[in-house]
Image 1 (cartoon, rainbow, N blue to C red):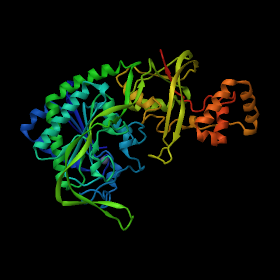
Image 2 (cartoon, helix red, strand yellow; image 1 turned 90 degrees about the vertical axis):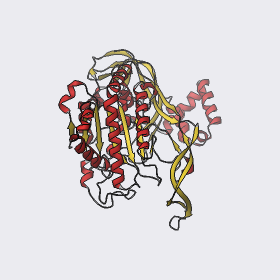
Image 3 (cartoon, helix red, strand yellow; image 1 turned 180 degrees about the vertical axis):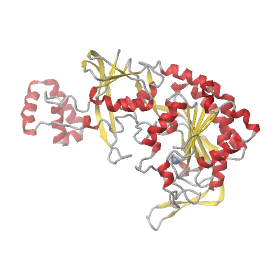
Image 4 (tube, rainbow, N blue to C red; image 1 turned 120 degrees about the vertical axis):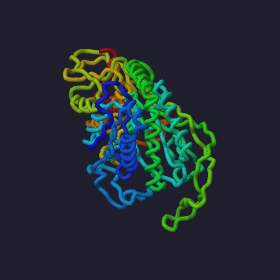
Length: 507
Ligand SMILES: [Zn+2]
């Protein structure tokens, strides 16, 4: 990976570090040229010296180097230039912008080490969109959006508003949300706010109490225009970093202190838009629908000769979707999983220690619902679970590791280790074996036992009859009826659907 560092030797002076990267998707390569162009000019421009003397810059022109070398004419069919580009994924066919949490690719492991070394207060990931045709030319999306992350969130929002204002005054058409329609190919469905999960760069960086930005120039603008726009974005953010960066650093260390104290509190993990909306103007084109002779279905056609200002709904409010109470002390990883989990924790720079064996009060998680992904995703089979933590007393084996919640990266810890979090190690399929049923009872063995229990236990009888009455699927399914009794049988595997990690109430 090629890295260009400006003022690197001055890092000890606690300067705000701005880190920007191009080519994580190597076909979306505006950032590489805009970054070189800007730095070449600024480094030889005396007027810019005052700005450069306030900050430090880390520039990675091309993150996905393999993809960049897969050069060709047809790698970006939904993009207006350049003539040839690289390709979206690495030579292992992995999308780096899904790899920030699971950190499986060598590229990501190297990148996380670089980011931890320079620990930028501001990180920008430079992309080009896909999607519909319109005239708005930029999505500029700043994280964190999580309410628990004030004051860094508030400063991030101010920074976002000022950048949008400055770019608008220079004649560009930026928006602060990802410009994809609520319903595909239906401009009238409008737009909505959202918080991307931390497999994406900007959300990942925000979980580390810093500011992360996703920059998406619009793919139908000509390449030259997009590079100028990306340069204008970088100029605006570098100027702001020189002025406000020290304040951002203070807010970030405040956020780190708060993050170290979330033990036992309710933590908002994911968000969704509310139904509250307002009408906004959006610079688009006239469009209509025609029937496709290929699919027989309607297809949208934009008339780019006729600019139009649309009035579309914008769902601008977020509400928490998944809220989880943070553990009191932290997480315990059993010895059989310690090596794998420790490797991941170390890649992220999360603190963990060994823990002596002994009896303790813990919280264990068992899923009441679990669903394996039907399709392979980034080479893995995802798993989603719902369930709850409950308290029990167990004897912990030696060789396990303890991950304290009391640390600045506590939000990242929860997103990796809470089983229900969308980018947890569990969600990425690292613990699938615990959610496969490994032993069973033959129906003809279970049947007589079930009859006997029904006859002797009125509580079970009542629950069974109620289920028959209320759940038609259950009523129809012999398998589900037998499962009902298997759950009660002493041979039921207590480890089935049980998450192997525990939460500790005290150290
Ligand atoms: Zn992209």
